[in-house]
Amino acid sequence: MDVFGFTRSKLASDYALITADTHVHSPLFGWEKASAVIHVSPEMGARFTQYTATIEAGGRSGSPGVGVQRFFYVRSGSCTLTIDDSNSHRLETGDYAFLPADLQHTISGDEETKLVVFEKEYNEHLEYSPPEPVIGKSSDVPSEPFMGDEDARLQTLLPIQPEFDMAVNIFTYQPGATLPQVEIHTMEHGLMMLAGKGVYRLSDDYFPVTEGDVIWMASYCPQWFVAMGKTPATYIYYKDIHRDRLSEKF
Image (tube, rainbow, N blue to C red; front, side, top):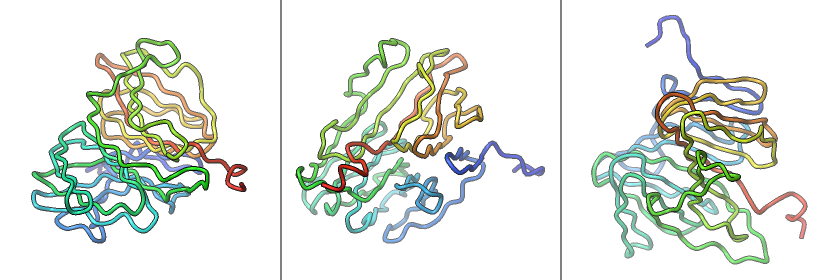
């Protein structure tokens, strides 16, 4: 509790920094023995939803809704993902899954489990078939130097294929490493710091960030990051891909 009402959280028209001291837990419709902190949503102008779900042992997820695809990353604990009531997979900390829109599935808590969740309506394109489910371990995903920098390494968790209209990556920086440029682009981002600390530029503002912080970046929001401290900084982030307003006309 801060008796003076101070927080690092800030909301602006093209970005938001949301820190743990401002979290409010709410029930999730259709979920059992579970709660969520909804960090990013259309109510703030975003085109997707990002939340942290906490499932108790014996709890279970609900549906994301008609036409909505779901990606989740196990931040802590373990759970069982069941697809179509028959195909089950046990996921532990660092594992992840992508579930295409309208795929019947349930996430059940084997113990108290925290999930980083991204959901968005699937933007269909008539030339492509809907994507298939993806289930993986982040520890098995190779990290590649970003733009040749060995100290800034990127893990791409989903296939970069046109049937996918979303991407989720994990970025790890050694202390002192940076994004090589201030980025300004059409993609929208949702991000959670998984480890370490640093400074994030959002528009014309600079913020210290640390584990558990969430950032929303609207399209064309200027953005940049530097890792600080004595340990690597890691974040997981979402972006929309392979769809633009012109291609949607065809």
